[in-house]
Length: 316
Ligand code: BDR
Ligand code: CA
Image 1 (cartoon, rainbow, N blue to C red):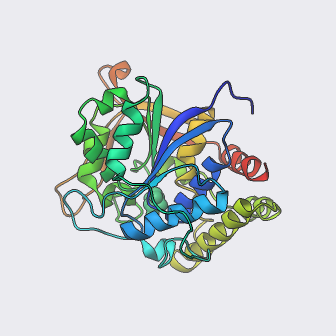
Image 2 (cartoon, rainbow, N blue to C red):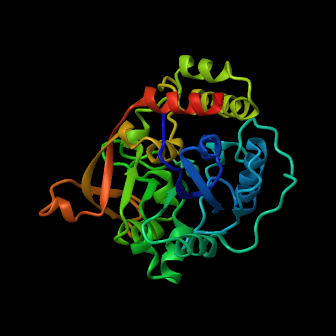
């Protein structure tokens, strides 16, 4: 794929097995992406672990030039909820975890997001958000001009027809901090929402895993180990289910190749009160003025295209 110039992005994440794969895809795509910062947040595992994991993934990718900032240690309002049953106690499944040699950069994730976006011209920096949206909500609160300044916010978060994956009606990232998600989706920043409706179309079939296992680079080996862990978890926790979906890498794939996704203008509201449906995303397509909508909801993903992109990047 040929690119005019790399687009400036921030990656906000809670690694997390699929976050780690998303990071490895992004680090392996320097022609398409200029990564200004990686910011981490408490989510799949605690904040200290997600920051450590992001630094470890950066080390595997040989991308020590990219700063990793640690961020929010808990959601805005609700109690923290981890997902270590899906990501292993370290957050990185079967990947061998040790203390990375390079430290985290100084400064909270929210401040790093503000600094990176406000120091560049308006509408030239995008952010991929693939964990609870706490850091971005904090940043938008601290800097009210931030939302208007962002080029786009590409979010793994929410579900419409797919219901939920952490409760019957909520997707994990939204459920883990519904108040933050409500602020980000309602901020007026252009949001691309890649929820379960799209990510459940992108599954790690045996053929797709085999293609990645055939690659020799350290990043490819790490991705194969992470995918194999996800396959094992899916087998154990959801017997009889199809192969596991690849959620977070879809945000990076969208930034590199948006044509792999079909999106529709939508109004998206987050449930923040009902104990039964907390974190549910009400996604409405029947809009009086679709052109005024700031959210686009992903309805279709080209799974072969996403895996092709991953394979191509990891082979480079
Ligand atoms: C999301 O939840 C997390 O466990 C994954 O990392 C992903 O961001 C999928 O619902
Ligand atoms: Ca995640």
